[in-house]
Image 1 (cartoon, rainbow, N blue to C red):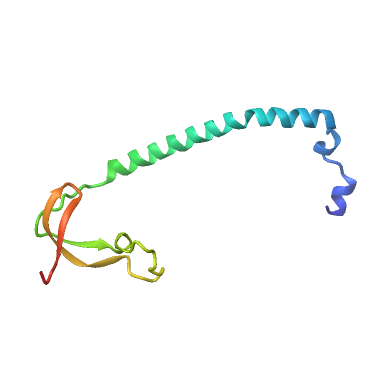
Image 2: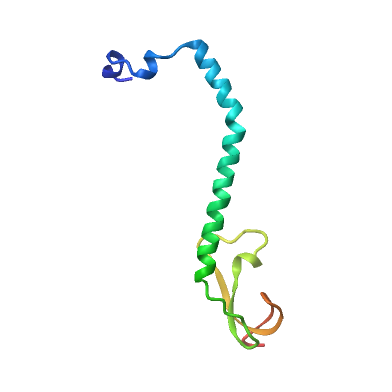
Length: 111
Protein backbone atom coordinates (compact mmCIF):
# COMPACT_ATOMS: atom_id res chain seq x y z
CA UNK A 1 0.00 0.00 0.00
CA UNK A 2 1.16 3.51 -0.65
CA UNK A 3 1.25 6.16 2.08
CA UNK A 4 -1.92 7.88 0.87
CA UNK A 5 -3.90 4.65 1.12
CA UNK A 6 -2.85 4.15 4.73
CA UNK A 7 -4.09 7.60 5.81
CA UNK A 8 -7.29 7.68 3.73
CA UNK A 9 -9.71 4.86 4.47
CA UNK A 10 -11.91 3.65 1.67
CA UNK A 11 -15.57 2.77 2.05
CA UNK A 12 -14.66 -0.86 1.65
CA UNK A 13 -12.34 -0.75 4.66
CA UNK A 14 -14.64 1.38 6.81
CA UNK A 15 -17.80 -0.71 6.37
CA UNK A 16 -16.36 -4.21 6.64
CA UNK A 17 -17.52 -6.53 9.38
CA UNK A 18 -16.39 -10.12 9.81
CA UNK A 19 -19.91 -11.52 10.36
CA UNK A 20 -21.30 -9.88 7.23
CA UNK A 21 -18.21 -10.84 5.25
CA UNK A 22 -18.69 -14.57 5.93
CA UNK A 23 -22.39 -14.33 5.11
CA UNK A 24 -21.72 -12.45 1.85
CA UNK A 25 -19.14 -15.05 0.80
CA UNK A 26 -21.63 -17.87 1.42
CA UNK A 27 -24.28 -16.03 -0.61
CA UNK A 28 -21.81 -15.59 -3.48
CA UNK A 29 -20.91 -19.28 -3.36
CA UNK A 30 -24.61 -20.13 -3.65
CA UNK A 31 -24.87 -17.95 -6.75
CA UNK A 32 -21.76 -19.31 -8.51
CA UNK A 33 -23.67 -21.97 -10.49
CA UNK A 34 -26.27 -19.43 -11.58
CA UNK A 35 -23.57 -17.01 -12.72
CA UNK A 36 -21.84 -19.78 -14.69
CA UNK A 37 -25.11 -20.72 -16.38
CA UNK A 38 -25.73 -17.09 -17.36
CA UNK A 39 -22.22 -16.83 -18.78
CA UNK A 40 -22.68 -20.07 -20.77
CA UNK A 41 -25.97 -18.74 -22.19
CA UNK A 42 -24.30 -15.47 -23.22
CA UNK A 43 -21.44 -17.35 -24.92
CA UNK A 44 -23.87 -19.58 -26.82
CA UNK A 45 -25.94 -16.57 -27.95
CA UNK A 46 -22.79 -14.76 -29.08
CA UNK A 47 -21.60 -17.78 -31.06
CA UNK A 48 -24.98 -18.04 -32.76
CA UNK A 49 -24.88 -14.36 -33.73
CA UNK A 50 -21.36 -14.70 -35.13
CA UNK A 51 -22.39 -17.83 -37.04
CA UNK A 52 -25.41 -16.12 -38.57
CA UNK A 53 -23.29 -13.11 -39.55
CA UNK A 54 -20.71 -15.34 -41.21
CA UNK A 55 -23.26 -17.54 -42.98
CA UNK A 56 -25.02 -14.49 -44.45
CA UNK A 57 -21.82 -13.34 -46.13
CA UNK A 58 -20.17 -16.61 -47.12
CA UNK A 59 -20.30 -17.47 -50.79
CA UNK A 60 -20.38 -21.27 -51.12
CA UNK A 61 -18.59 -22.58 -54.17
CA UNK A 62 -18.96 -26.29 -54.85
CA UNK A 63 -15.91 -28.08 -56.24
CA UNK A 64 -16.25 -30.06 -59.44
CA UNK A 65 -14.09 -32.73 -61.01
CA UNK A 66 -11.00 -31.21 -62.56
CA UNK A 67 -10.78 -28.22 -60.17
CA UNK A 68 -7.40 -27.44 -58.65
CA UNK A 69 -7.25 -27.36 -54.85
CA UNK A 70 -4.70 -27.12 -52.05
CA UNK A 71 -4.67 -29.68 -49.23
CA UNK A 72 -4.38 -28.58 -45.60
CA UNK A 73 -0.99 -29.79 -44.37
CA UNK A 74 -1.99 -29.84 -40.68
CA UNK A 75 -4.56 -32.59 -41.33
CA UNK A 76 -1.95 -34.83 -42.94
CA UNK A 77 0.56 -34.52 -40.06
CA UNK A 78 -1.04 -36.63 -37.33
CA UNK A 79 2.08 -36.63 -35.13
CA UNK A 80 2.17 -32.84 -34.83
CA UNK A 81 5.88 -32.62 -35.66
CA UNK A 82 5.47 -29.74 -38.08
CA UNK A 83 6.97 -26.52 -36.85
CA UNK A 84 5.18 -23.20 -36.83
CA UNK A 85 7.17 -22.09 -39.88
CA UNK A 86 6.07 -25.07 -41.98
CA UNK A 87 3.71 -24.33 -44.89
CA UNK A 88 0.01 -24.52 -44.10
CA UNK A 89 -0.98 -25.93 -47.49
CA UNK A 90 0.41 -28.68 -49.70
CA UNK A 91 0.99 -28.64 -53.45
CA UNK A 92 -1.93 -28.19 -55.86
CA UNK A 93 -4.06 -31.26 -56.38
CA UNK A 94 -6.71 -32.01 -58.97
CA UNK A 95 -10.14 -33.18 -57.86
CA UNK A 96 -10.45 -36.64 -59.35
CA UNK A 97 -13.90 -37.52 -58.05
CA UNK A 98 -16.51 -35.95 -55.75
CA UNK A 99 -17.66 -38.60 -53.28
CA UNK A 100 -20.14 -36.32 -51.51
CA UNK A 101 -20.18 -32.58 -50.79
CA UNK A 102 -16.97 -31.80 -48.91
CA UNK A 103 -15.31 -35.19 -49.60
CA UNK A 104 -13.08 -35.67 -52.61
CA UNK A 105 -10.61 -38.04 -54.21
CA UNK A 106 -7.50 -36.06 -55.09
CA UNK A 107 -4.63 -36.71 -57.44
CA UNK A 108 -1.38 -34.87 -58.00
CA UNK A 109 -0.92 -32.90 -61.18
CA UNK A 110 1.56 -35.52 -62.35
CA UNK A 111 -1.03 -38.25 -62.01
